[in-house]
Length: 304
Ligand code: GLU
Image (cartoon, rainbow, N blue to C red; front, side):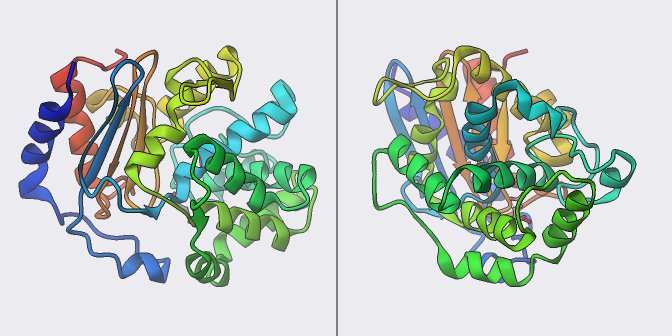
């Protein structure tokens, strides 16, 4: 099967909408990104890589990094991780503090900022250089050592990370952060500022479609059981406060980021990544979600 035509059809379907949505403006370097860009990559376990548009252009993966950081922490702690995190959709914005107070500093899930900060704290406890550990993890998955952190972007975010810092302090007051707030927030901002292209994101995430084994290197990244659970978390909590709508329209485990990228997993079959910087009201790439919706319409790959 050749998916070149599938991607072409998706690109022409979304063409009239390219440039729509708002780029994330609260991180200054992201505010400057031209929204009229669109790239998509598909990596199928049987047929390999297919790309269209700006699929080789690197972008800031932002919250897509939460999936990889969580996979690392889940490997380290196993099910003990659930003493520090929950696994329910939050129903609140990704950077909300509201629930933390009523739920005693335990974040709803690893894919909202509070949860990702706990994950970053776990990595800070285990690695001398936590940012480098996440970067190396991704470099191995993508098999490319040129993958890097956009340090200018990371710094810009660190300067304006008032909410993340507040959340981290708040969780620390409940005893759910073991390291210093600055160290944890820095590690978190660095992981968010890793730049990858769509073609690289589908490679990095391919283990999620392949029961935890990286299909390129044949190495076990996560156990079969953990992989199923990461996909479940992506399906229920991976696309901000629109996970229900994305399940309805697309029907795949997915994780989006405010850089405009979305990674989607077709368990047993494929990974897809779309990048289009304009975001919809919930913070998901507007054109990216449309493209994934079209993908599952054409292929019938929705898990539902
Ligand atoms: N670094 C961003 C933040 O913490 C990530 C947001 C996102 O992509 O969801 O605000």
